[in-house]
Amino acid sequence: MEKIILFDGECNFCDKSVQFIIKRDPEGHFKFASLQSEIGKRLLERCNSPKDIDSFILIEESDCYFKSSAALRVCKNITGAWKILTIFLVIPKPIRDFFYDIVAKNRYKWFGEKESCMLPSPEERKRFL
Image (tube, rainbow, N blue to C red; front, side, top):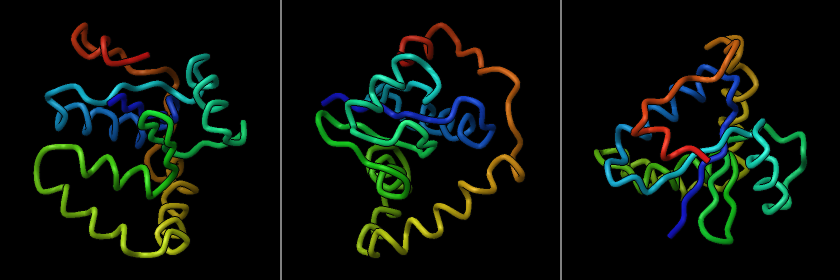
């Protein structure tokens, strides 16, 4: 099953999140694309999402997950104790996304903004679209 993560390529927190996922996805189930890239923009259209969205997005086959739902579904598919976080899926989405939005609104202030995208290793480069 194809799993693509769309992320804000200018956000330090998002960049660290991608690195975190890569380290915990040794089988390489996830592929990555920045929201700012051409392929990222095309994938956003496929999800029928607004063009100005800057959320973390998970695409699994024909399904698109946004914000907390995307993050928790990723946790389900990485190694380690992170799978236990999927228990939060029982919390109604508006409540989960309220807390997600607090972090999202402050991510540049708390974690900074990147001048340029990270340079992945040759092995990691295969996982970027």
